[in-house]
Amino acid sequence: MINQDSIVALATPSGAGAIAVIRISGSEAITIGNSVFKSIKNKDLTKQKTHTLHLGHIIDNEKTLDEVLVSIFKGPNSYTGEDTIEISCHGSTYIQQQIIQLLLRKGCRMADAGEFTLRAFLNGKLDLSQAEAVADLISSDNEASHQIAMQQMRGGFSNEIAKLREELLNFASLIELELDFAEEDVEFADRTQFHELLNRIEFVLKRLIDSFAVGNVIKNGIPVAIVGEPNVGKSTLLNALLNEERAIVSDIAGTTRDTIEDELTIGGIGFRFIDTAGIRETKDVVESIGIKKTFEKIDQAQVVLYLVDGCQLSADGRLDNLLVEINKTQNQYPQKPILVIINKKDLLSKEAIDEIDAKLSTNNQKPTTIYISAKEKIGVDELKNELLSFVNTGALRNNETIVTNTRHYDSLLKALDEIQKVKYGLETNLSSDLMALDIREALYQFGLITGQVTNDELLGNIFANFCIGK
Figure 1 (cartoon, rainbow, N blue to C red):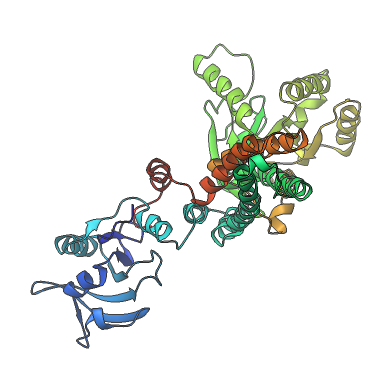
Figure 2: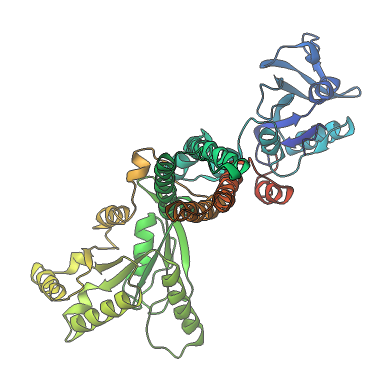
């Protein structure tokens, strides 16, 4: 698959800016760059050392397009492993297009999405999981997702998988050797050591698989649904959390008829807050659709904020009704953390708060309760800290490997299944040839993660998600 033709693309975001970077990579990259570049000191780029910078102009026939700075990276000591140059020009979109069109006429072709990183993988500069981490790093929008992507790009995940694969491969070769001497009935692989290895691999695989629950929400943001009756302050709470007027607030019940979503980073973790339509009986067709969407968002959320107007709880039967609704929600979503948020704390007396607490304490499924004033932004920081407590950041703090990629997760599950088959075969004295089949499949799944086993379709699916120019 390694293609030596020279590719070109804009490496910086499209649009006007202070500068833009145009990247060329391939066997003729430096020669093509030199053909359009006139150094202020008459340097020949093909004769310059790697990792050097050169000031000059891009010339199209006799026409000067721009004054630029050219960086030279000679293979294999470049990002792609090939000869690469980067042209830093002024950020006018006109200049960018003029230079790229000139390079295309000189023999380059436009790079496909992710083709620079694909070439880095094919040339052995990155393994496949590290290449995928490049895309994650570019899309990271909070401290946690950035930390995970950096750890993976540095090879933390790859090293764990490679070590497991190497140890398993050593035993696999001994098992395969036994098949060559099947008639002599000899054993080259120490069964006790092999069993210990399988236990160790199983332990590591389970840890990595379990980490996906944390990694997936960190990568994609933790969805938090704000639910409750109409006009209890859900939109006001969303605005208080985001510290901006994101949702329309009014005294009219049923103002929010569709879901409103926005993201906020708390303690380095991304949260996606969803303001939903108030839940009530209604004949309004549009509002009914909004309420239906509310229940859909509760299904998708990982945390539910059940908001209540504290001032309404003093009415007869309201506290009992609240307990019924809380229990109903908890029974309907037993796996979801549900926080009961009592709004308008600033208007509640100490006696009213004590009464509410006493009533909630009688509930067998006493929920976590926080008092806030969404309007006055009282208790909002306490709410944010409580939300953080639902995220297991221990592995993140300890810089442990955390799996965020669904493809990796799928291969880890399949590898674990094969390892458990091998363990069962070892414990039941299964023949070596049958165990060898399961070992090969486990090795295959490990290879899929790091790219030791690939095909065009797999690589096409992965790198199609990259931006052009990376």
